[in-house]
Amino acid sequence: MPARYSCDSIGVSPALSISGVPEEAQSLVLIMEDIDTPKVGWVHWLVFNIPPTVKEIPEGKEPVGRAGKNSWGTVGYGGPCPTKGENSYVFRVYALNRVLALPVGSTKEKVLAEMKMYVLTQAELVWRYKRATK
Image (cartoon, rainbow, N blue to C red; front, side, top):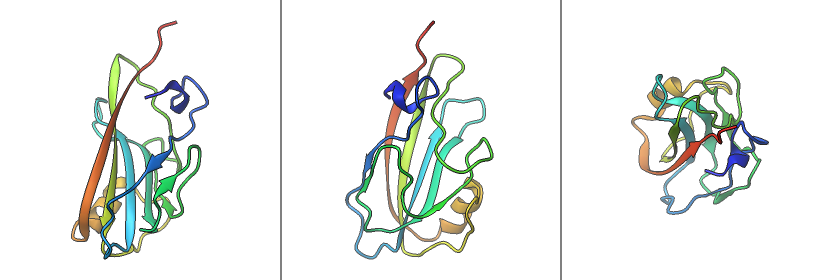
């Protein structure tokens, strides 16, 4: 993962492309999490109720939808900042056959519980990041 997306730089969210969304999808969910932290599943970015017509998320932009709470307790993107070694960051996009009736600031746990019966398909991308030594 380029440093520009991390705490070592400007910490801007990366551009993402989305394809292969089923026609019957009514919304998308995006979750980015660190899967190598002691607390597995540290959420860096959570957005739900993204329109299924969204094909591109530009760098530094939040997609249209509802922002969920990250593991820092805020909404919006939080860049990688591993304390030791190289960590893996997984971006998951889920296509759902419904719009979730949840408020802005919902947690990953609430979003996953609400969507579990409505997932049509999912895709994931894994990036790795290691902080430069100073």
